[in-house]
Image (cartoon, rainbow, N blue to C red):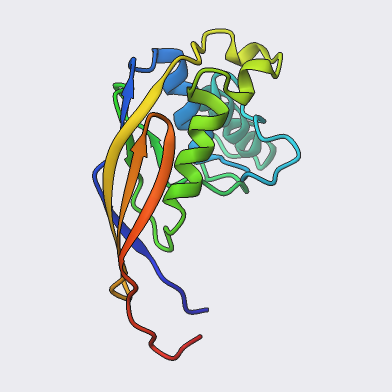
Length: 173
């Protein structure tokens, strides 16, 4: 199947910075993101790295393999945006067919970062250390491989996109 990929330059700043618990959980969530349509969008354990290692060890043991566990990607999708390890910015994780920055960034803001975020009222223990007091702002340049250029602006937790050039129609659609 033919499709487009978009490359991004820049990443919005998070104020105040994320705390270590927020960084750890959100980075794991973004790598195992079930997508916005999932019936349980927060189905990621509090210590996802340890949980993934345990699952890999269990799989290896059931196959009779001895030695250090090899972690294999789960069946979930992933989000192409995640917090930096310092919790200061959202950064693009370079992947092929990355095209949904505005949707993914707005999802992260609405569910986990901003005051009144949806996860704040979920009642789940994994969010006990989340502050839900962040403001995300910044500018991202986006270039799709068909020539489409756009500017993504995140201003006080609201994501918008301005298409500067539409790109070309290569007749494949």
